[in-house]
Amino acid sequence: MDRLLNVTTVLSVVLLIVVLFSVRRAHIRVEYSVSWLLAAGFMLALSRARPVLEYITRRFDIPDTPLTLFLAAGSVFLIMFFRFSLIISDLRDDNIALAQRVAILEYHIRTLEQHED
Image (cartoon, rainbow, N blue to C red; front, side):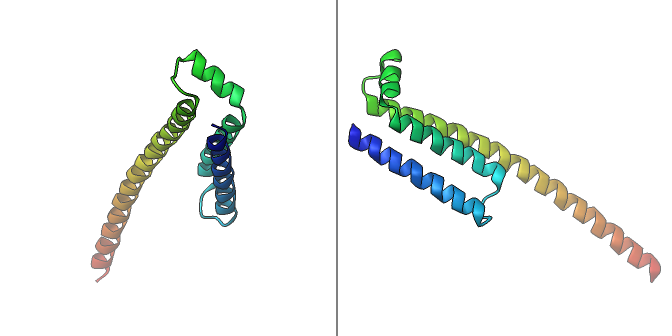
């Protein structure tokens, strides 16, 4: 169990570092990095708080403490992926609206050019 918690700790720290470097180099926008930083921080705190994991395991009658850790991690990242799916959907809708506006402007420009000739 301790090895698993140590691996989870290392992965959480690596994720924190990767996200911070990505923000610094402008590979990811700050508003999207907050979710990743919170998730990595949550996993780091959970991996270092073994009594909390054991309490959750007993409270929800989960058969094994490592399973509790993976259920928590899976839940956090599932919520994040849903959030990003919503963001992508909004961006797609905005992209379609923008393409339609550009098409209308191009039509008006062509119409004006034809009237000038």
